Length: 68
Image 1 (cartoon, rainbow, N blue to C red):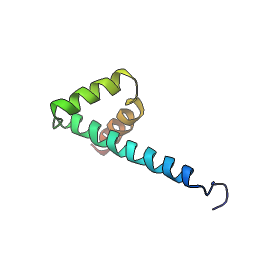
Image 2: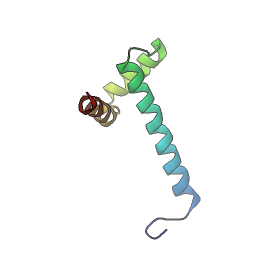
Image 3: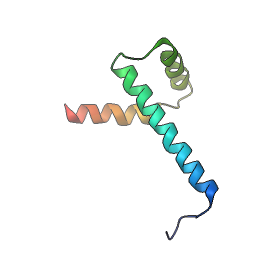
Image 4: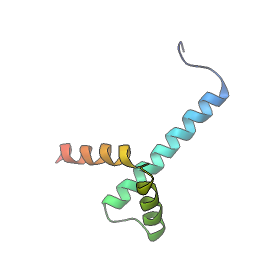
């Protein structure tokens, strides 16, 4: 595909980023639905303090608001 590097490192990085985003989406969704375990809550709060959930939280909450 034009414009995209065809090396394995790029593909692996992209896969890791996608898997990380899926994890964050699930974590935030479980928190918002009150289904998170204590371990998940600890991870959620740590990531929240680090600012790593800002975009994910914003996107998921915005989607919930527009669907209501």
